[in-house]
Length: 131
Image 1 (cartoon, rainbow, N blue to C red):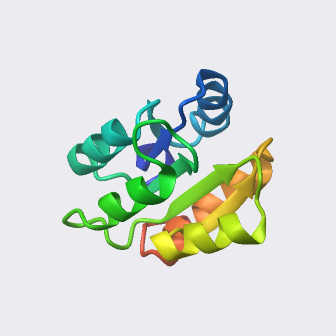
Image 2: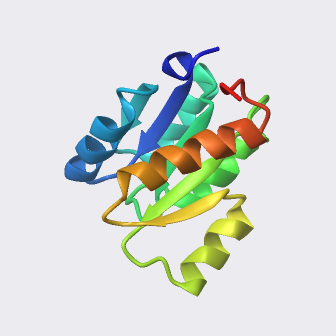
């Protein structure tokens, strides 16, 4: 499976952040995007993404709750979930880790770091990378 065939689901209530993440990821992955935490869970159940990128704070379901729900879905327990946040402090890191998150990245997102982290986590989770 090539990276272009791998699915990355992104959920962020900010349309600007969704555009930024989409523009970084689309050349490398098939991207599914939503502004709703609940919708992210539904998309994950349907499309079985290879990785998920979540905002921590969303109005309907926050990122950690979305992560827990996705991890509870059949076949998605090992799916890497990355969190993006404006405040990547120790408390945020602890919340994300407790929810099952694989990484915590600060906003504004560094595109090279985001792509490298996703590729690394997909490979570590058993996804078919190029290595």
